[in-house]
Amino acid sequence: MVDAPSMRFASARSRSTPPLSLAVLAGVAASAAIACSALLDADVVQCSVASDCERRGFAETKCIDSVCVSVVDDSGAKDADTGADTGADTGPWGCVKSTRWPEQNTSVPATVNLKVVKLLGNAPFPGVKAKICPQLDIDCASPLGEVTTNAEGLVSVPLHQGFRGHLLFEPQPAFTNMTPLLFFFEPPPSGTQTQETPIVLTSNAEMSTLSLLAGATVKPGLGHIFFTALDCLGQSAAGVSVRTNLVDPDTTVAYVDNTGSPSKLLAETVQSGGGVILNVPPGFVTITGTSSTAGRFFSATVAVRADTITALGVVPSPL
Image 1 (cartoon, rainbow, N blue to C red):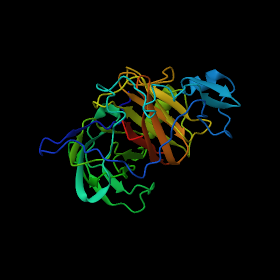
Image 2: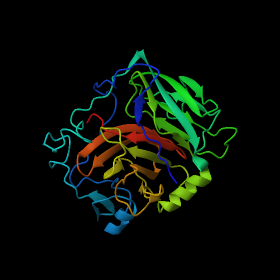
Image 3: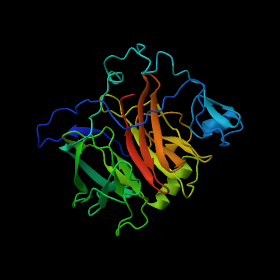
Image 4: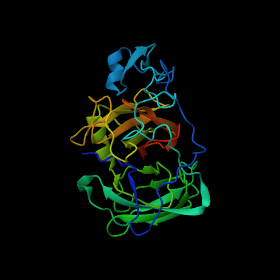
């Protein structure tokens, strides 16, 4: 039922472009998950028993002083940023220790080709407008430009190397009950790239249904995160847990099961790599991704807006 937007990119066939260059990412706040670190703010009453944490999607936690607290020792050999040998020098997680992203360079153009569809029927959505927004402009008050999908729902977005902003999709004349969506480019673009999976636009009613499947209720004034976890090979990754550094008492993590629906029973991603985090406080939120086999592999700070979906790929990043 849910096709969480992912960031699986391929070089455009129309041009001969080098692979995504690897450079140090600047301007992104990293958030390390450490042993026994509180997943939630201490002032938030998140739980009374351990099962409350499990119900909200926080795996391997216990309830201490009304806060869900991690019991995973991320300082061990599985944590990719410790320098310890994870035993994954090649294969799906072989890039974890060495990943670099393109530095921002406004003089070097980059283009990302996207397809936009509606959740209901997964049909291409023509005539959809999206604003290109600066990195710190959550409401896109000063857009850098605007693009519109063609008859097949396709659009080429002109950006620059290492672009750290986002796209803003707001309710359209043909889709007035749409939930607004912020789309982030993870990893940042370089050259000409094509995203292989579509951006999915969702109605407010569909959001309510998805939240019920996830064991939650949409809370007005909060935002929501849709993600797909990908490994070093660009394949959907199972066994990944995703966290945010900002939460509300109603924040709920759910992972997409093999039928395509968010499930409150899953503690990490399955084959689809997808998941949602519902009811996240608005602002700049740091998201981390941890593989059960490779340790923490992703950390990035993105914007979350009230009553809006933030969509991104949880992919190997500089740590």
